[in-house]
Image 1: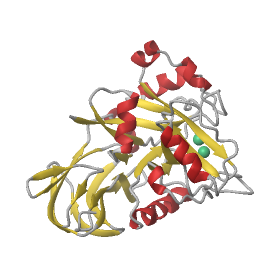
Image 2 (image 1 turned 180 degrees about the vertical axis):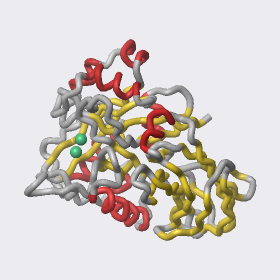
Image 3 (image 1 turned 180 degrees about the horizontal axis):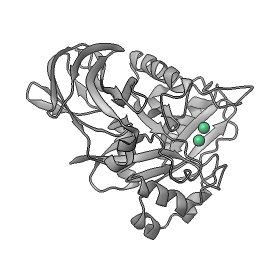
Length: 330
Ligand SMILES: [Zn+2]
Ligand SMILES: [Zn+2]
């Protein structure tokens, strides 16, 4: 059975430029109610040597990772079984590097693709010329604490949508790019990436969730999504057929509520977005909302909109796509 669990997908420690000790990072993540995190130090995996089964049992699950930090962009690389060299990758050899990651059993995600680049933050924006998008598993569409406070995130979503419109299958993630302990008494607007984990909560099953496209990002509330079509029931990352379908969305407000309620997040309506345009919209309340829609080839995602402590309507949560085949079995 698939169970969606909250993760923080982008973290640094003293093994690169963070101020966290490794146990301190895991303890902080557990205190915020995360079931796990991806440890993604810049060009370093030595932090993983400090992750023991006892520490994980006491705090949260760790997905082993690294943030390839280059002059042409940052790539989150998770779960490689052996070392893959990042040092000589250039915009024109990125496909070969992605092949090596895949061969090593790794999962690859584009970090903050629309971050400010040179001369302010040299290498932080994405300049790699990927041709093999089938070798990329996910895109970090929300980067930082408050995803709506930074222009890079406003640019990242259309950037990502353009890739979906080209027919690529890519999951989404949020990453706080967490570098150190929070100021005592502060109430940061914390995102979470929920991963649809099949079976036990292991790093392998968490990686399989990303590869299967079973992810959504949120400022707090949870989403339960089921697409029904001709007797079958589909979830995120799966492929439907063109034609009539029912999409049921249940918004949950209990999971980790003590963490995010301080930011006065209030869900207002659910939107279905198909191939980049709004397909339908319904207000949300106690009960699940149900859409009856006509699917066309491409992709479909669920978005939850509402307000936070600023009182401005914004995206509270959004999902990786459900894909719709071309009709000829593709
Ligand atoms: Zn980065
Ligand atoms: Zn980072």
